[in-house]
Image (cartoon, rainbow, N blue to C red; front, top):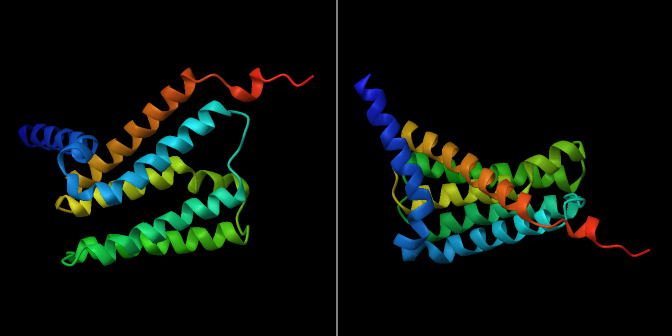
Length: 174
């Protein structure tokens, strides 16, 4: 029972670090800022324009971000551990497959627009960048913390979107 308590606190501490890292580790800001800015802008946009749906072109662009983030990590990190290397190659591979499926409209728009949503793409990329550039061990604690961070960030965005005025329904052109 005591070990579960330690793991839980460790997961919470690591999750908190995912939120704090841009303020505490200035060296990873060049990699994180485009992800943070892109996520915030896209989530605020879809909160403001609630009737608007993600399109195929945005899906392709979002999925391609996974590839470019992975390549950026490969080029900027000289000493990736084996698990980190697998994670980076996994991100590049995921980006390539999803970009291909989106580009050629191979799967349904419903699936494509969920998988390639800004919430999914930016948060996953951010989490991987923080994990690798912060030197987190690639273990169960980090995986659980990343999942908790992912859910927390997306919940925060949904709450913020709920407070935004829907521009599409408030504009009357008649």
